[in-house]
Image 1 (cartoon, protein in one colour):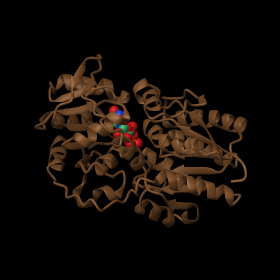
Image 2 (cartoon, helix red, strand yellow):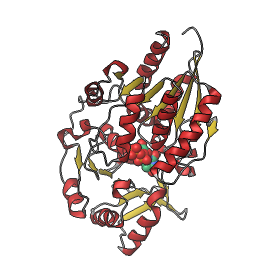
Image 3 (cartoon, helix red, strand yellow):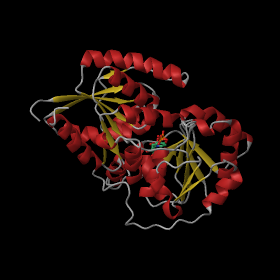
Image 4 (cartoon, protein in one colour):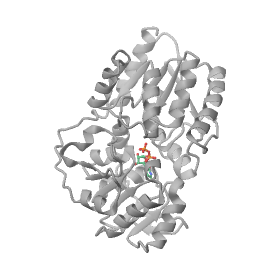
Length: 367
Ligand code: UDP
């Protein structure tokens, strides 16, 4: 590239920190690209934010907007206004967003209205469920982007089917790159985890790894089914609880005397990968964790009617529980997977490299 280009990365939530860490590492080694990072503030607890920046070596954000909470509209609107101001001040050559959160949508709208090129990493996933709040964010972002990076064969097909083939390409999944990086962190194995009161518990030899916090599952009734099922597994269940459901889940575990359920604070990324790889089973409503279970070849039960990526469903490697009841969770957990290690729909672990190439090509074409 003839000149240095300025890329403004906008992140706000835990999975975005993980994905951004991989590309930030690549940018750091390039003379032609200067990255600045805006943190919207969507996730702000230490264990949901700072820990990831430290552990994954992400440069400190240049700007932190400190915006979180409120309804979807309130949060997105406040971010939109604040991001427009930052983008005007900094005039980046490109705005880079990840995934499907309100931070992603706000940055995409702000960039599009300022006629700034937008690049979307993790484009093309579709749940085909418009009541899933992230589906709206994904669709809008993909359609506003000048560059879409698709993590799987199905996601590039989705983009092509929506007429976005010209601006889209298959790169593989940044989460897979991040996962491989974490696994190569040789010798990393956390043996204790912190409960809410700070007391340490030792990770049992055998366990189920559970995360559940999404809007679709945050009613008392649904969380009660999840805790009931978790209490009936024949190995302990480790459940790092997202702050948004912490009070409810703590109360339910106490009311149900669910002693098989070990509630802990949210863990760091390396801990999460290590817990995934060592688990008998993963039960989750997290998009990222479904894919990590797939990479680790650990059976996954998903507490949603749609998968993170259709590719995870093959050979029963991921079983969906559409109507979350304790019985259905236990039934899904009994479905055995078969693993074909040569089936690798998430790329080769070089998604970041491919994305950087495409970004450089974009500027060389003078777009
Ligand atoms: N994760 C983590 N600590 C935890 C729970 C999850 O680091 O206590 C990781 C997990 O391994 C995955 C990501 O956070 O990489 C998933 O984030 P989240 O569930 O918030 O978002 P989603 O994947 O649904 O977009």
